[in-house]
Length: 617
Image 1 (tube, rainbow, N blue to C red):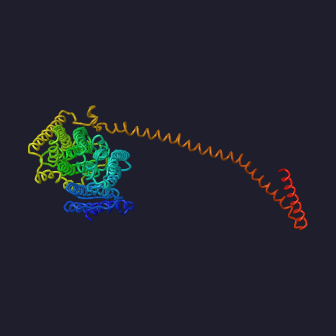
Image 2: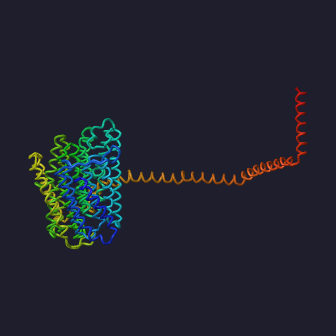
Image 3: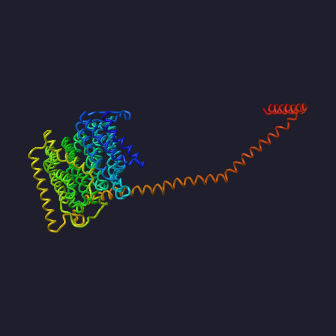
């Protein structure tokens, strides 16, 4: 029952809150109810991580809905619950996010994520995958009067939905290949083409959900959503779900022979290229979003080389770090009304608690020892080095780029504020509420200590590898700080879209992948749909309408010409029958002598006929 309670509390509680949102009275209770439910989910998650329950229920004929908490999922359920509670507390400090619709949707989304990480069969995984997609659309487009946010939500939804079709393909291949229960653990047992079809479907769905190349562009638009949504969806849940699925099916990737190397190279390429995209950003949330793709790339890389424990450590360290950074960015957006790096100069000095926690997260993101992502990243790279030196070098290059974009963000927020008012994207509140500051402190602890705890808890990367990556990160961070300071001293602003060259412009636009997708996929699809619509309207509809008109005309012609002839024939037959009837009634006089005379005539006629026959023969 523990497992059912773990997923039932957020799903049912969230659904009830969304339904209660239609009552005006519900607004006062939504935020406290959400925090209470989030606390309950955290307690249940900790209990599940300790007790490791399993559950199964019949779903379809021969296909159960299997759920279980094992070594891998136990870490994730606690991580999701901690970030959920932090996000709900943070949202309680922002007036427009205390509404039942927001709190309830957040809870439903988190419930779907908990099903995702505990699913042992494809059936509940598919259902949770669908719920996550729908609720992420609702959360990104929460400010539904902002047409840009609605458009971004639509782009994110359609992109991830297109990739999600891979999961259905994988489920179909599993059924066709003989895995009738759709158990994830049974997928490596597939043989022949079904094995490769299932692997391809899972890989496409996971890469799309985790915003890896070439699907990464949807995460840029998703930053139009509220900051707590970014903290939840783009740190510990939605983007993590795809990477987690790849870790879960690592044996499947390995047995195919091609899926593991493909996934590893996609993760490594995303770590480097999206890291460069992060460097080119002038918007703090865009920078963090691109860095999310890059950091999740390390988990994908770990899945590709079979480093499941290392990938899980990176996933947890990234979730704590990135949720902290997104919430800090949200606190500054509320207080200062901007998320542009230029407008955030002096933000860390003006709000020192937010600045200190943001610094902790940014240094962790940079891979500075002894913070969490330093250990997580090196653990992944150590696993990679056992398989491929080339992949290790690319991963190390991504770590250097991570130091650059992290310190760039840090440099801006610690610079003295510029004179004059920055351009505001929303009305600044001028203060950070206590409810917003508390989760930052809560998340700063795991962002700082998760890696050290992992090192103390068991064997990790070698000392040489840790030292090498630490030196690279520190040198890259110091060089970035020095370059930015020198450029500022020389009167040249460090970065910005208006000052970016052509190459930087391509990076600032997230490699132009969204434009490419619109050109190569969306527009041809829309054009084909328009052509089919015209064919339907101009050919099929006209053929149906023409057939109907022809039938009506034929009916009219028959009514005018054919019907009178038929009526005449019927009338003639009736008249003939009436005449024959009159003739038949004449002999019936009732006079006996007349009947005798008629009989005599008849007998005479028959006798004459018989005589005639005899004579003729």
